[in-house]
Image 1 (cartoon, rainbow, N blue to C red):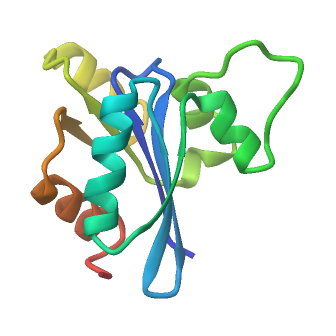
Image 2 (cartoon, rainbow, N blue to C red):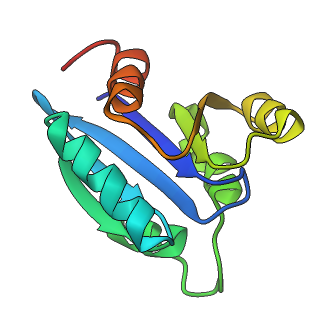
Length: 135
């Protein structure tokens, strides 16, 4: 099964998108604490033939995935990257074009770093690069 996590904002943000391949249509869990960004990503992903579920933070995403931990008050994208998802490709989305932050995210295992706001061509690139041009 192909999968990807796309995290929004910085490496330590509470934003991500998780893609799981279910046949020809990946099921994407889009997570962003900003409603406008979340809706934009949802629309772009749906336009790219993805099934989309949304969540407002990483903790809620973990609950959707059945991995929530009631003992933790907050979970960051960095926490998720260092957990069982370490082998899953990660794409960071951020409006901050800071080379040191971009490099840190890539060094910590992110496969890609995309600047917000995302465009349809960005989603197509993510699907092609992360899901090996399947769809």
